[in-house]
Amino acid sequence: MIQMLRNMKRLLLFWGILLTHSLLFAQSAAENQEEHPLKEAKTILEAFQNGHFEGSFRSFFMATDNARALSDYYAWAAGGNLHLDSAPLYGFSFGLGGLFNANLSSSDLAARDSITGALNRYEIGLFDVEEPENRKNQYLVNELYLRYHCKKSSLTIGQ
Figure: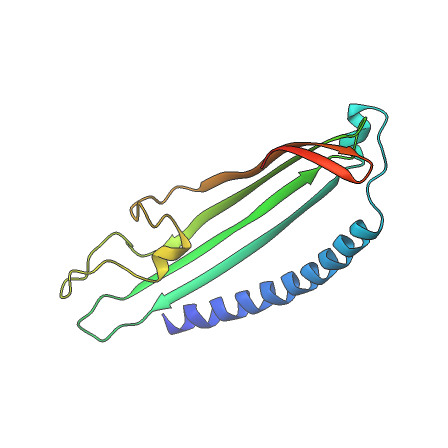
């Protein structure tokens, strides 16, 4: 178990360094995006080709090592988000974004502790808190909108 935790630490450190570098690059690209807005497209295909696409990935490992008589728990989750903004076409632009989360490995987070009868409090927060027995991947569309731009004003339908 200790060797597995050491290997997990090394893996998380590697991903942390890689993601930090990626986030710094993404922040620079986002700042550049604000300074130079997307050019008006002439066709629908051009609106998607010249649009802005971004995403991120995360991996999180958590373990609770309780006193001997109490239950121990662990969980490893991976997930991220993807987002697309189309370039404007006749003043209209389209946005779509979503999240995903996967249970790579975990103890039985729906099992109650044999002494206290309590459910897991910490690791379950990485997954579906409402249904701790749900081990399926989770997907969520969190943005879907149509926006019309006119001079310095805009009207958005959706979220």
